[in-house]
Image (cartoon, rainbow, N blue to C red; front, side, top):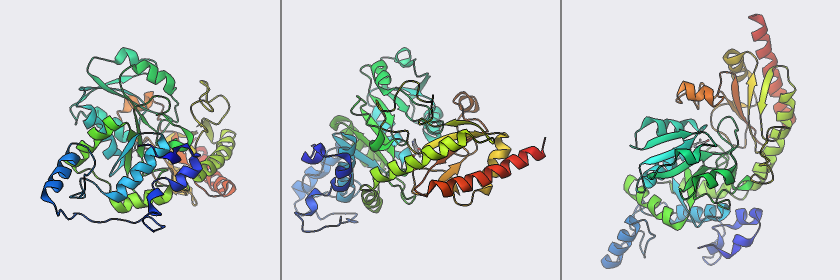
Length: 402
Ligand SMILES: *Cc1c(COP(=O)(O)O)cnc(C)c1O
């Protein structure tokens, strides 16, 4: 299914992927198909088409009904698959919807999952909740092989991890997993900086709400994978109704041409802020792969094309100081989520990772001092001025209490 343009550079693919057929149709901008239902003129053919889609395939003729297939969503799926170097991609209504669908698809192969912390708070919560009836073994990064069982259906990892920016060596993870499929949450890195499929991962997951949407106005999730898994994922989607709305798919596709530029420009700003934070007296630690000594396995250049634009830092004065920073930033938005064109700052222990077991949270380094920063496209000098004035106020508050 790979399009000939897959040999083009990433920037060119980002502009053209999924748009190849528009010329033939005599149009330039992408159309949006909002149909909830589709005419079925030939009942035999319509029935066969419905059956094919219920089995996880594509329509043969009429798409019949939009929960089964939507051409606007399918166009974006094909484009994202191309960027990730995957055979196919399946879109869902949110990142967590994509995680849920991947776990439900995994259940057809076995009832056991191996997961490495830290993971996104929602993913951790879903796995720990037992809600899907899966057994989960939490493994250390070097203990994956030991955690495998005959009924292990999937190994789940995230790198860089949300929110600590902990890095995993994917070659090592995939080697340890052996024949068991590995799912990599690639939300932080995006296909611009990291391509887990090329390293042997079977499934790549995105909260497309983040960089792929990039403008803070879409909620979506994606799984890029091989044909076999895509069939299982589409079966789950048809049954559960866990679909992506075509307007959301349109917005994601519209954000795709600027993805490489956004990611690199945001990354350049993050490098500047991380270096300055590392020297600031209000900060006790900065976690950013682009700082000296923070990439001991040498993953930058080998696995990742750059450190990205997310960082975590620890403020002197713990929760109290962090809450001053949250309330005093004026240009940055104090908000969860990440990967947007504007800068977002948040406190994981109180917000995104609140639902994680407290012991596991501490073990992963998600302390009350930790803040997460997602650097946007603003001029880094303006961002630094904003962050610095907030840090000065945080230091003053802490000093007033000792
Ligand atoms: C946000 C996020 C998710 C969940 O995605 P939603 O779109 O919020 O449901 C999953 N993984 C990571 C790494 C995330 O940052």
